[in-house]
Structure formats: C-alpha cells, structure tokens
Length: 625
Image (tube, rainbow, N blue to C red):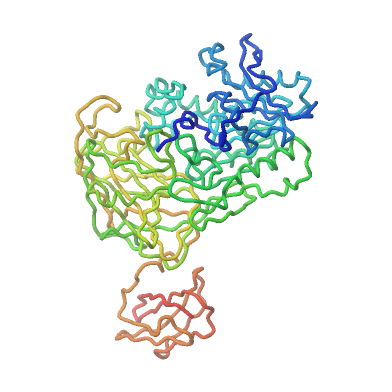
C-alpha cells in the first residue's frame, strides 16, 4: 500500500523521523526573503538553543517547507537543539508559501543565490552555508553551485543530477511515461516541453549543454545515490566528470556514496532505509546520514574527524551485500565477458544455434514489477519477477547454476538480433538473480524502441521491414552486483514493460497518438550468423566454468579429488593443462599416463584441459579438496 502523506513528495528521506504528532516551532516562521526581482520567497528558520552565530544548512524544496515541522533531516527529528547548525528551509518560487512569486521559467539558481545573500545578512549567521537535499532538492543545489556564491561552502545533493537530458525522459527512445506523469502531478508541468520534443534535437542539445556543468564546481560535494534510483547512470557520469573538470583545487574534494537504495518518494523505502523493495540491507541503514554529518562537520565546523581520509567513492556491492571503497574517479570494470543467448532458454559462453519467438500485445502488456520507478502506481526497488514466468509474451535466458561468484561493475549491454511481424516494436530487458529457492530478484532493467536502433533524431528514425533481421543494442544502467555460487544469471526479454514505459502500439505510425494497437510476433535470433549476447563488465575469466562443458569422451574420478585424478577416455590425448579461478595455468605437460597427481594444488575449483593429436582441446572442471 502506498503512503498517502509521504507519496506527495519525492523526498521521503526528509521525514524519516516522523514518529509522533509533536511539531517543531520555527524560530522564524513564514519569514519572507526578498529576491533580486522584488518578489519574495517564504522560509522557516530553526536555530538551536544557545546559538548566537552559527553555520547554516540550507534546504530548498518544492514540497512544502511546513512538512519539516514534523521532522528535520539527518536524524535530527524534533530535537533541533541536539546539533549545532541553523536550518533554513525555503519553499521554491511558485510552490506553497512562495506561490505568489511564480514567474515563467524562473532562474532557481539566482533565487538560491539571493537566499544566501539574505542569510549572510542575518545576525544569527556566522559565515558558511552548506546545502542538503534529495531529488529536486539536490538539483537546485547544483544550480546554486553554478552561481558561485562566496559563502556556499559545501553541498550534499542526493539521488540527483543537474542535467535536463533526452535520455532521462526517453530510455532507449521510449518515454518513461509513469515518471513524467508523477512529475506533472507534483506541479512541475514538464509534459508540454517533453512531449513537444520526442526526438533528440538541437533543443535537447541546448538544454543538456546548459544544465551540465561539472567544470563549474568550485566547492566540495558529497554526491549520494542508489543502485535502484533512476538517476544512477547520470550520477556516475557526472561524478566522474566532476573529479576531472571541477576547479583544480577541489577535484579531490568530490565524494560519492552509492548505497542499495531507491529514489524514494512513492513508498516506504527511502535513501538510507534498511528495507528496499522486497530486500533488506541492515548494514546500509542511515549510512548516508552518518557520512553527511561527518562531511558537514568537517567543512562547516572545522571538525577534526578525519573526513579527508575518507575514500573518494564508497559503494555497496549488491549480492555480496558489503561496502567497498575506491579512490578512482570511476569504478567501472575495464574487462568484460560475454554470454550468448542460446536455445533451451540458456545463456552460454558458446554461440547459440536457434531462435526464440514471443508475442507482444499492447492490449495485454507485460507488467512492470519494481525497479527504478517513480510513480504512485508502481512499486519501487528490487522485486521478485517470478510472476512473469507464467506469461507467454516473454522469453527468458539463464546461465547454468554458478559454481563461483560472478561480479559485474558498470553498464551491461545486450546486442540482440531481432525481427518482427510489425514495422516497430520495443525490446524490454530485465536482469535478475535467480536464488537457490527459485526467487527471480530484479537487479536492473532497460528498453529500446526498434525504430531508434540507429539513433534518436528524426533523421535516425527507421521503421523495420517485417521479417527482416536487425541488430539492436539495449543498454542497462550502471550497476554493481555479484551473483553468488548456486545462483543463476537470468534475463527476461519482452516487448514492453507497462506502466513504467510508454506502450508501443506497434503500428509503425506516429508515436504517442491514438491508434489501434497491433500485436507483433517478435523473434530473437541467436546463432552463428546472428550472435545475440549480453556483455557483462567485470573480471570473471572463469565464467565458462559455470557451464556443463561435457563435450568430450573422457571422465575423471574421483571428483572432488584430494591427491590424484584418474582419466577414462577412448581418445588419445597428448597434453594437459590445469587452470585456476583466475585463468592462470597452474599445471601443464605431456599426458604420460591416465593418472594426474594434484596433491600440491590448493583447495578450489579448476579446469582440466586436454589436447588431442589434432590439436583439439576439450575441458572438464573438477574440485580439489
């Protein structure tokens, strides 16, 4: 069930301590702050007892500043006196208490600059201003950063990135309809702008250039994101650029924290909660608050808390469910492995030899079940996709049960060869972890509209010829995930995912217009000529061991073995080699007998490769006890 009070806002995290009917009374309630255009914005100011000259944390919100009377952020709740900061909470121009100041196309960065000017003039302010907030409250921090107010000392933008981009509304060329409707319901009124520009154009190019400015960053930031947040792809890119393009003196004062968190705002989960969708992460609970406190205390209070020695990137490894760190500007893996779509619903290291066909009916679409959604009508975060296994409009491909862990870090892509009976269709992909108990837990998902397989401009658009085979790439957002032993890698492929993304009517006509839906028969081709595959960014050279490579006539016993392996085969093998889990050859030589001594090998899983007189190699895995 959705939480009505909280679902009115994108920033559930703001109200995480709402546990009683008590309210805070601002020291300055509904104070009007003058803007440079002679309008005024309404604000509340909370001052801890005994403060005569304190540093300020500024929060600017479109979701009603009065809600903060129920609970201040970062775990303060109702106890403003338990910390040292003054909190200034301001309604955005055109929203709630600042509704009367509404103007077309406001410069919210300038408004933020004017608010800082007002704060600096107050007798209770010392000299520094930090900013905090998720989603829209994070975006406006970037706009203030771009104005370079001299007292703006540091910022904590959460699940936010500054860029107004085509990709953030049209995933693979497909409108994320549910999110746009949610934003309209919250008062942003973006639909007219977005729907007037359904193709990538100079309009989008100009908007992206104007709103992407890592080179404008001149203060320290702590950027906080979540693996189940729709902003994560853009956040990872922006952080990398801020580490390289920000003012040289602060390039090494940009930090990134990525947890196992959703965006928040449409359910009980938020950035920092332990419960996320159908999963629970106790060791990630409120880590965001802890790091934000250390960050603010270091930069606003000169606290000696060793913040400067904090790793530049702190990130949660899903699957293993542990925290990792890095001082690089990017944690994407440099290597990759390929699994091919194959017959019998398999993902294999060997190329496929068949095709798979399913129906896509817009009148009975494949439902969205969780994910990086933002809608009151959709669940948010990781959810079991097993319900989809009972539908005939979706095809699945799974690896064999894994014998070793497989970790991916970066952007997973699928290169698919597709034909259809219609002039257009969508290809929706969901990546899951199959648990030993049969749960199919969603990791991430993506979609691609076939008419945009070569690009997103009007000139790029090209409909399909029914029956012709086309190559298309479906890109999934940046993720960090580990499948554990006894789990399986699995993908679901369908023609839609509703109601998150717009339904393709598959008629080949103009998009986003009323028309009669057409059912399409979609075929995925996976053979030597059309090698459909998934590319996994990571370093998993022994991924091949997770398949049954029983292609030879030889057997080995015992398996597991302790001191020796005995080979049984009718073939005449000449040489052997044994590789470890890192792909390193640890033993090799001529095969002089049918017994191999392995007592010097360490305990683990190995691959035995035998070469026959024709140079052909065949392999079998074994376990050394």
